[in-house]
Length: 333
Image 1 (cartoon, rainbow, N blue to C red):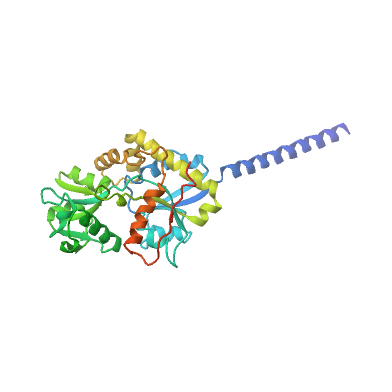
Image 2: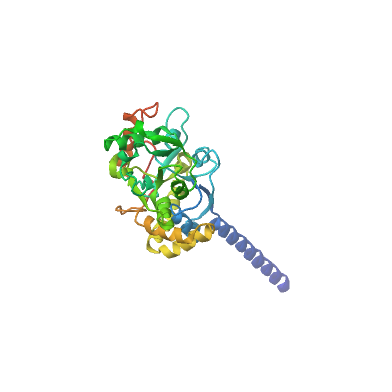
């Protein structure tokens, strides 16, 4: 009888131990299960994206319980992928996202953070040819994408400077390398983002003139680029959205404080990049990610609305854009 009781007790303890192990494994599995997020770039990797790659490499996303996959954009654009719910976030721009957030066929999209605080785009040209100001575009060859907002922007800054847009020679843009295009004189002026293309021109030794749109007219100090999210997904996954943006913030703030390491991380993720260019570009971009604001990613409603109000005034789209369309600060820390 004693032996039987001992055997029963041993079996009971064994079953309890096995049950405990199973429960522990289930709990551990639940705790380590991560939310999958697909993030779509706007183009090939560059210093606009440094903080994203840093957050992934440093494990900030992992600590937030997120499994973030970074992918290249499809032919129909990153916005369409996010708007359809096949991805959760992407890189976009306040001007180019406009057709997708207005009208009958608008998509479920909102900008949830600013990757760069100010518009760093403008016109670059060969030095000394008079295109250091908008009026200087008269009679010159400008590489155009033939987009309504693009041409209206050029027209506005020229008007502000006393120039005549009708005198600009519009050349359909096939530019993939701004330095080569300017050196060959196939065009005289190109719209660029200075943090990459402008710095690349500096690194190549090409002497250039440049003017920024925001310096001519403050209405063009809009937000470009931004983190664009699927509105429905963000609403249903508010905590995960906040966790994602918090980890992303940490990635960009780390890049600002540790530029050399950030350069190494970006180049590791995209080894095809010229490290010398990345380093010079990173030095420029570190001053732009947060600029004067204390909170990374913050979108100023006044500046956001000013640009869309300009769109309304110039009737560049069919439907009037209501105030505060297309962005939110609700998910930022």
